[in-house]
Image (cartoon, rainbow, N blue to C red; front, top):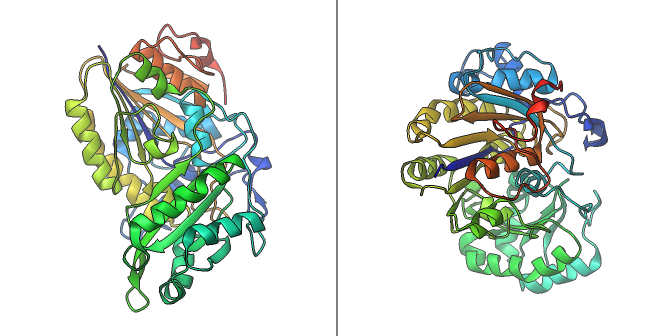
Length: 416
């Protein structure tokens, strides 16, 4: 039985979303945002030389079809990305009304978002009184800090010292449907932070807030504060079975790498591995070597998004792309005849763009295991349907397979 590996490079968008004008960053529409394209242009122009130099160098992803996917998605011929594709390649468009992590992943796994998320206004305070009261009660410190829209790294620098002095957790949100709770791992306690998130998650999920995220950090006012890898997401479960549920129902092993298990509320998974992207890549290599026949391994590499996209760090984003590309042959060397590996993204996060939030973009779809094959313009849900097709699963969700013989082969000729 063949194996499947579905790998999400978090926020590595390719521009060109037809509805980008409906989504905003600091009042500016996302029209024209292009994560990969603008990083490549900045590198070629010498504007991304911190810790690296020269044009964006992604030979392995480009050989699979990355440059061709960017051109299909957005019309941009990205500098340094022009190889003749040797893998499966295309570009996917999202239909769900959101540009956040759960929305993108759920649709990739076959379930487009059937509702509008609840978002919090850009006011101070941002949370309604009943939510604030629940947060204060769950925190057990007599109050909360923050209560506004904020960048996670910035708000812990601003309020970390006050948090240590008062014991009050730092609570904030963003343009996503999310409540994030930050607290010091040692002074507040990691398990106490997790318990606080668990206490308020049911109320917030009932309001259709997508995630409650525990954001532990360490450090001091003298040395500075930094977030740790012990993040934990409490996500609203998908409203219907996903790719992982289909695989489990068919008796297949399902392995989660990164925050996949959190995004899907730990449903349909046998195990989960968390850590830095470097740690997660080692886990991906191990599963490439050892995963069972007929299994699904679903991975998310978050640092493109969390460390570089939201922080609008073009050079850092380029370095991370080049790190992943250089490491990629180690994983590909573990794959067996008949295996399929698909690489994609869940949304964009153009580090050259206004604001600090995600950007509405199409995403690349790259594949190893089927030779050179253009699949053209596809949907997010077609990715999950194609993985299901490869694994011989009966379900397809909202998508259609773009694999040879799949129902959507006619899409290959469609433009973007």
